[in-house]
Length: 265
Image (cartoon, rainbow, N blue to C red; front, side):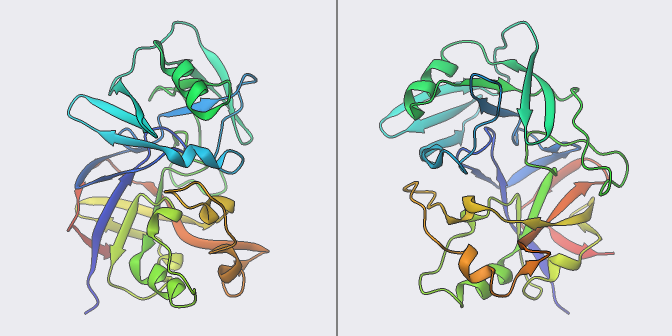
């Protein structure tokens, strides 16, 4: 019997900044609690991403008991888990979606502007504000946070191991920014997953994840290379796009933990 086990849980509280590894997390419709509920936008309201600003990788985020700590080189700032908000809605853009957000009050926008060398604002996306997933891939009219398109992403450790066997220099999982990493199973089997559970929480696989240039950015240095996209393009292309990992929606809420069994339905 091929046992599959949840090995890693990750959240990315501020889109395109560093991730946080957790032992336990609470599943909500839009994604794991705190995952990508905030993002940086430029003066026009367009979201900022490592695709065009790889130096964002150098902003690291840690979860403390009552706040996040964001570090950039030798400077840091703390941010309450429930951030202070400036009254008044902002219309901000993430890919083809325009959503309503609120600017985070206090020194945060100016701190990030100085750290990244980009005039920007830190905004927060309230849980009740709508952003539907692509209707072609919904199960029950699900919503998503400020992730690119779907609330969750899962990747098998065996998939990364297979990729690394094809590379001169192996790469860490953080290049792919998953929410869930599992052990067991065979390489890339998650491509075909439809309905499954992690612990007591049920999920549905809805779409293979198309990979972009962010995977080529070293998350410790912010430097770009050619891998893994070059290698993946040789054997993981679907409709001219490189795929790696499976996008998910949750069919219910609940708590999950590292070590939980994964059961395919």
